[in-house]
Length: 315
Image (cartoon, rainbow, N blue to C red; front, side, top):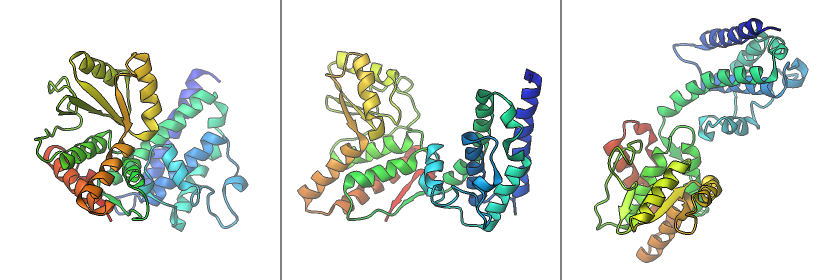
């Protein structure tokens, strides 16, 4: 198969998906169940192409992975779990079967090289993910937390639900809210999360005395270089990252030969320990302190950000 034929199949696949989306758009919108189903179908084709009807469709007409396995599939593609727990509508399963059929169960895609096929399927997933993200932007982060769980778990839930839609905004303002609650007598600046340090002539995201806090959802060599500059200026950098990124941050610090001079802490532990300390000092329960920090977070977010759907509601 020559390159022209390969490009034709890739182009046809994109056209099929777009026509399918149009056919599933009812009353001006496409349902979450159907978007999620599209993602399930494309994921099946990434794992086995072509797919076979009896292997992916149950005798009752349901597509496998649309219920109990949906959460893992969505999270694999960076779509937070609060988008949809499981696909429950019959219509969505019918829509999914139509997409399989229109893509000929992947028969044509199976003819092109594996790398080209996976690249095409990932492009289709990006299109579907854009609809999920649009829906998420309209929804506040409404979180039901179990009061019996630890503050670390609560903060982890917030960060996990922000994944895929925050781009670091939630993480920065959550840390800012924690610092504002902890240091009430200090005037803590509030900047948009995507205003770069150089652009705003900032040493870091927050400065308290000789401490410089850098908050990032995805550590890079760039932020470690900023930490090294802080050290040379006589300041102590504290790098705050999601727990799942903590090991990466430490490896990068070793590469910069600064691992012994930078304090690297997970955002979850940083905020949770403060909740515990404040609750103990003020004789309050943990959840009331979390609520206070979240209230400050919402105020600070509203002051400088445009996407107010990132406001948090913990219950």
